[in-house]
Image (cartoon, rainbow, N blue to C red; front, side, top):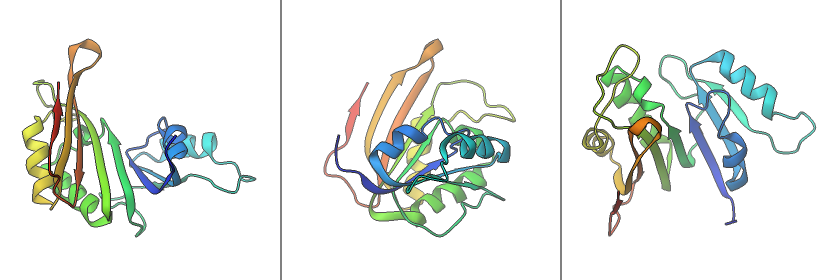
Length: 171
């Protein structure tokens, strides 16, 4: 296992499914979500009052990521599709850019299938995510598309504040 990085933000952490894995690779874990009940469950499952290092969980209110920390990695997995309001999505991605360490990385995994968006999910193509992150001053440094359960197309995209010399694109 590689040396742990300093900090990770798990955006849309829910009940903390990614918490144990991310804690293996980061010295400090911060999970945020809009659902207070999910955060309470995550806190109950992963916070040990006797442990020297504990994950931190915070509530996203009015689209604002709590605190003022910067992060080495911002991770979000099948969460941005739940932000159906394009202006709120733009503001969220701008917060990612503002809170990302200069040498940090944003990693997103999203469903990019050509499904019909509704009031709960907004299915966006890879090109739309590239536009949104570029508008926030972030450069794509890696892209991979895979077929998930049920034949849905998912993309994992990596962004940073520094332009990469080469883009890793694989199917």
